[in-house]
Image (cartoon, rainbow, N blue to C red):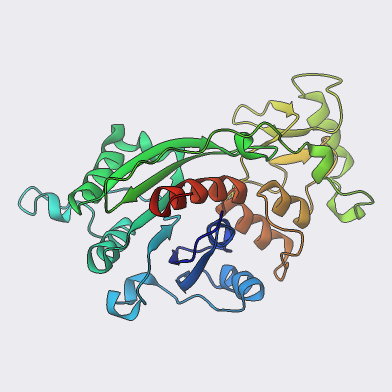
Amino acid sequence: MTKNFKFIDLFAGIGGIRLGFESVGGKCVFSSEINEDACKTYEANFNERPNGDIRKISAEEIPDFDILLGGFPCQAFSVIGKRDGFDNETSGTLFFEIERIIKAKRPLAFMLENVRNLTSHNGGKTFRIVTDHLKRLGYYVHSKILNALDYGLPQKRERIIIVGFSENVFFKFPAPLIHRKTLKEILQTDVPRRYYVNENIHDSRLARLKIKNFPKPYISHENISKSVTPHEYCSALRAEASANYILINDERRPTERELLRLQGFPEDFKIVVPYSKLRRQCGNSVAVPMIEAVAREMIISLYGK
């Protein structure tokens, strides 16, 4: 099932959301990303360089499109002041840019992705402001927390997905898949020595491992209390985490290709930046199969099976 439709890719990162919607027949007609390194990766893989800061781009410069996509950064949403009222509650935030473009371009639909904590930020007020503003634009809004573990990937990554339609069409979020890739399926063999941690780190991790003799392969992560917990899947990749936040068998860091696989990127996805930057980019990106599953349901809602 594929349909021809146009979309724009805001806060594009390295293109994970784009991949999900291209897989169901979409054509990207505009992209925007401010980070220079992410733009390098995006351009290498999609043969186009994203436009820069969306705050400096007028809605008139954006081609017409059917669906707006955006994994917008989660910033503190501030209330400007009682005199300004509801219309200005999101001024100064990047969500405001999404609202501005939706209001001007009136797409058929949108899909926004953010961290799970958006729903609880500021006692839930931030999330209510977001959804209320989208509804005030005349859109029928659906939201749900989805986990990459349920869509074929060995990564526990929970994200809030917000979907909206200009018409009151039937929509349901995708059901979990039956099969999930195992770590063994995504891990490389003959990994170069540079990915392995030194003996002190290795011994320290093993000494703090909460479950001894956990079957290999496993991925462990070090939590805030410094305990080390092994799992048969990866904890959520994080852009700002330390280099040793997650380790495979408490022996080595994941390779660039393994990081991309944990997010469901294709094998031919080009790596054009150093390890530290690619690790950050993967942490900021999305679980591609999960986005694809949402895209498929959206297209069914818009165009039928």
